[in-house]
Amino acid sequence: MLKPSLQLRLGQQLTLTPQLRQAIRLLQMSSLELETEVRSVLESNPLLELDENETSAEGSAELLDERDIGEALLRDDSNLPQPEVAPAASFDASDDSSSNSPDNDTLTDSPLDYEPDWDVEPSMGNGTGAGSHDEDRGDSQQDAASETLLDHLLWQLNLTPMSARDHAIALALIDAIGEDGYLSETIDAIRDGLAPEVDADVDEVETVLHRIQRFDPLGVAARSLSECLWVQLTEQDSSHPALALAMTLAKHHLEALAKLGNDKLAQQLGVTKTEMNAAVTLLRSLDPRPGAQISSAAVEYVTPDAFALRHQGGWRVQLASACLPRLGINRHYESLIGHASRSDSSYLRGQLQEARWLIKSLETRADTVLRVAQCIVRHQTGFLDHGPEAMRPLVLREIAEELELHESTISRVTTRKYLHTPRGTFEFKHFFSSGVATIDGGGASSTAIQAMIKRMIDAEDPRKPLSDARLTAELKSQGITLARRTVAKYREAMNVPSSNERQRVS
Image (cartoon, rainbow, N blue to C red; front, side, top):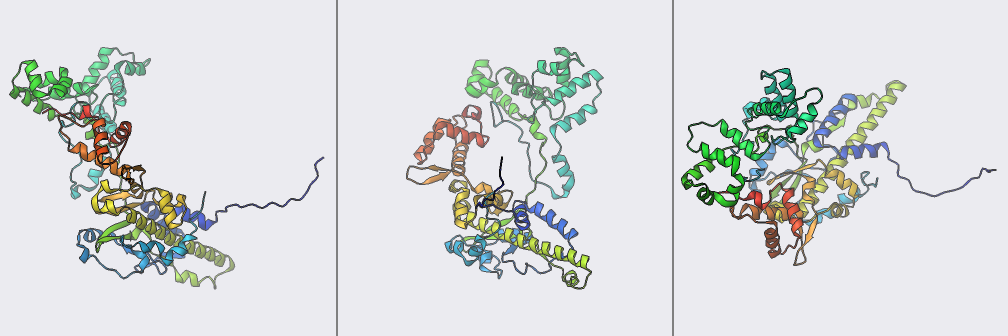
């Protein structure tokens, strides 16, 4: 029989207070989500109001208004605005003492610190892509950009007279088209998917397929590059002198054209060099990936949380105004607490406490984002000065140890937070990458290595593109030793095709 007894045990347990939960939730929000959250709280809490002052009474972070960004980035160093702010508000990359400022001691105990392509000829195509935007087009252009290829084809199908049987076949074919515009399934697989409702033979499916291939964009639903180009050629002006040869090349000799080049293939086919060059020029005017003409992704907008500005030979980091909303306590409602009824007073006191928590959490969030941005800029000054090839290896642990915060906190800060620089706007995570040891004992980041590989590929001879083995040897000559498969992995990560696929015809 069990007897009841008393036992004493010592242990540690982390308790997430409401303030801590709120601080963590706000920290991992993007600027747009933070703006939505603040608007919602302003509507529900009468003790909160927008502060008319330029900065919060207790906030120390320097805020840069978005309307001044363009001017600040274009000015010379000597002409940059010099706002009067507290020292913790900005950072000069040349001054390492900023990491040891007195303010950092108070942030160490922050509630956030706790542990819980072309297959043959990539240069061909008409170059259709995103160009410069006309601001007057506004929303209509955004709506068009959000239309998917599937939507575009279904819209045309609904306007095309067809029997119910052919319409069902067309739906199955369109459903099998990938984002690049090519048919991703075989005719037999599509027939099997139609059965038993529609028992279509191969000829029926082929007939409907040929009709879809004439939809816009022309050449969509092709089963190969050869078929894609051939379909587009069928719609060319029949009087074009190079059309017949171009159709022959597209249907039978694309691979030979890439391997042999214009002159040798012209000799094999018994045509003149002039005729061959004219046919190749016509092929290059076609689009090898017609599906890319129709954007399948909605336009995504990002709002920078911080800005890296060149200042007096160094780099200065400033927060965007949206990173620290200007909130204050409504003094009128606060004065009513002592004169209201018991129930109303209790409600107002609760709202006042929540308002103070929110303001404090927002200030802590802004201060943490600023410190992390400063630390990133301090470590990646080479990237800002010289470009991607100067990116140094950096991991979350380095930033966490330097700021005396936990890695989970740094992870939250670097997610969906963006730093605007003269080289572009990048997510904080962009500045973190693993390192590869170099021959001289130093290190190179994977981002820098990818930039080096891209530079070598851009400068290669189109007739003799660099193989992965050649790229590996070139990197080794620059002091970076990598396996060939690692170089291939970096190349594929940049969506750069292999040397065989990059080979161009003249």
